[in-house]
Image 1 (cartoon, rainbow, N blue to C red):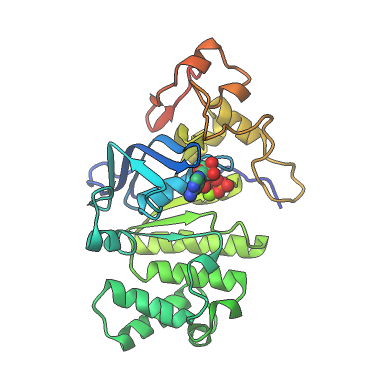
Image 2: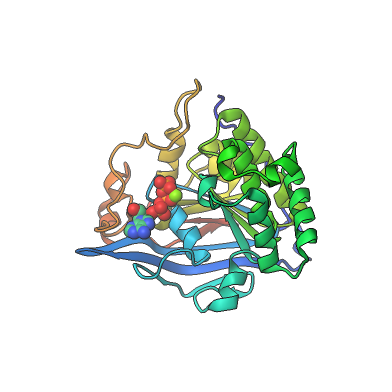
Length: 343
Ligand SMILES: Nc1ncnc2c1ncn2[C@@H]1O[C@H](COP(=O)(O)OP(=O)(O)OP(=O)(O)O)[C@@H](O)[C@H]1O
Ligand SMILES: [Mg+2]
């Protein structure tokens, strides 16, 4: 496997390339906090996240294990059980739905028509006791008024679109009868079946072998453009980020450390944590590019450090970093950083 090669990424429709066309803001999250009550305390998984995504744009969320990436996505789709989860935000609007106020039909609309999510393990998306076809057809029928035969023919078309060679056979297969890569394709087809405005992909290729990984990433990129969706790509893998997204958000300890267009992030990382992440990519000779190399331990979400969550591991921290929490501030157009030391 080669080292991820940062490259110029074509700017999507959601960028300053087309300022004269009003862009639709698909997701707007301001000051999101998510905590879980547990025996003897509170786990503060997300501690003031702010992010947005416009139509056609792709955003990568990167950060070490436990930084709050999945919880952020699950909160945006209200997929967390509440309680134990407690979600607050100054604003959280997804495709015109006020996420925190959504009830009943609005909640159902949120998870399907507004947004769909694909996961690392496609088995979590499918019920093992029903065929793939049954599940995609039921999803279509739940979100749209279509006749069963129409829904089945659409399911066939979607399976063909995700490059499944024998869609009719796969339609009648049970999840356990498919390989990991095929099941991942089927999950993408099911996600697309509601024609969502945003696709959340949470480590969608981590469990797959390298060749299949590349094919699935390409497929996700292709359908994002074809369906005009926004994309939120959550990953540990800087190579995936370099290949798939326009803009990157770096998370640590439940907070945004830095946000930048992908090329700028690779060229001139501003936050010491981003610098450490980029330096942590293992050598050129194979292996998974997991971000596990930064010395020191991630913050304990049950007892997060005061000030900047990265200060105990930061090589350039000063006294202020352990006392005051740095706010996310703009340093250049499209670039934000939360660090007292960043220029
Ligand atoms: N249901 C839950 N109850 C209690 N704590 C939780 C729950 N779900 C997540 N957490 C905690 O919230 C924090 C953030 O978790 P999250 O799954 O968002 O991390 P992540 O960035 O997605 O990590 P990974 O890269 O390993 O997937 C972690 O400390 C995790 O243990
Ligand atoms: Mg996760």
